[in-house]
Image 1 (cartoon, helix red, strand yellow):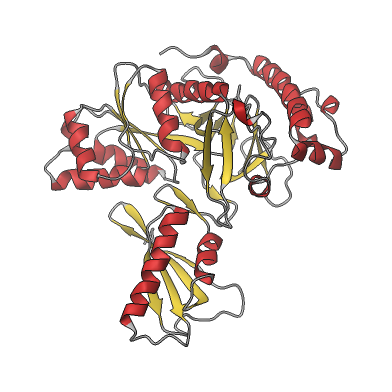
Image 2 (spheres, one colour):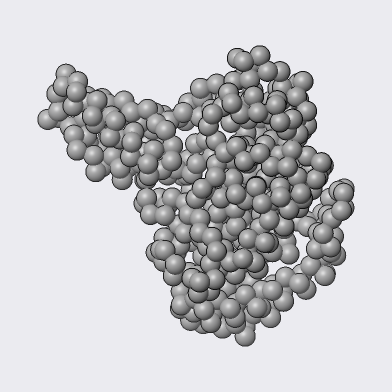
Length: 431
């Protein structure tokens, strides 16, 4: 296994590199992004005030709302002619957050994802079955280019067609599986129905992300799929998959620190926390050209560990994510906020704003049921009208949020009222 030089730098060498790149970054965003120039002015700082990573706390935070407010391209630091790729994801109000990539950004992305594959022991000898979704979602293409970076054979399967995926896993002799952990378990269930035994496949490792999963889930995956299961971290605003990944030691996710400067803050006070304490992960993109971000608040909760790993990498590791500091739901790898759903429901004729979101498990997959009250003027026996309302809600949820949901219409006043905060989300997935 050959590691990139940047993965084995001493802490002193790494921090010197980070400081140089941070200085260049602050000047670049100040000169090219009006949003940041204004932010710097509001904080009474200039690029000249940033001489090393020790000055990082002087810089302002960037929020996901800032990406929405500057939709679509106002945070870009390069002319649009230099942007070769655009991805986007949904926001809490239904507004997309847009991210762009230059040619160099794409090259860096492929290289960093390639590092991730190398970290889990993959090589040019492997056949990588990629079941992450392709398209505006960053998962599929990010994994794809990383696989090509190490010269592996890629099967660009994307999502869906589950039984066919099982057949191709067997027929093509895949040795690496890339998917959400819940979909990987679903593949196992589907394979059993068509007499495919995972334990007899060449498959040996899986790289799973895009949704939270536990050590218990790892054990389940490794037992059922007869593989080693590895965690990967990324988010579209920063790059996509490949920001961090476990190595064969499975003791935390190595962050690509030559490209991403990380901090942990108290999500309430925004004060920096020492290594080892649980808090919100904040990331600064040191090399991103198209849409560089300074101190981006990810809302992801984790800890930083800077002790050297037995694998030989000196980069900091983060613990498996324990959750988020906001109310985001992750359903089958798709980020969904209750407020996104609420926006659709409030604008649906024939319903009231009284609703609940029921999350359950159907086999290995998450399911979402939306229970919403009908307006008092709608008769519960108007079957055709009710069917139209259900179809309309399901269509909009799928179209705008990218998830499938069951819609259950209830008579007026069916949902218990609360004098305080309404209980919108009922999560039964762990029962």
